[in-house]
Image (cartoon, rainbow over all chains, first blue to last red; front, side, top):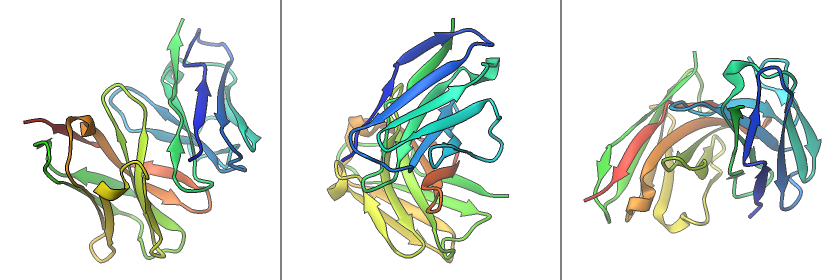
Length: 107
Length: 120
């Protein structure tokens, strides 16, 4: 099973700041890495798939990068609605796994 | 418009069998490269993948729950059913179904979730 480790666990930033979230895989997942945003009481929402492709409706301030084992989700300038929990997920092989999440909170 | 909706019991007793149904619209499980999966989330914890079934018949379950899970699809009624046997209080949480697309290898659309409590 491929383990996805997200860091940091919690990120405290202010609106307008740049956020950098990391997801590291225990072995290569090629480019089959997705990022999701989850707000309290809501279902997750797909932001990025195939490591760097924005899903429909994802604002341009969100970008994904990386390949193999190291991936990054960057939010160029935080807006109030971006404070949430972010998860990475792979489907390069079975089983599908999710990371443990990064909580992005207002400083 | 594409929608997915989970349904099932809100309270299940330990050792019983939990059956959850995902009813979807706006897409078909007869379409190549389309799948529907189940993901759960214990209160305050991370997402955990449970099972996934595809239009071509391929399916897979989480190895940690493999013997307890069954996923089946009913393409004529646009439903995917998850059955979990011998439930335990640790199975308490919100259960989501979501569409999975093979080209993107991601869950692009999710249901609102069904809250399940396992308690006597």
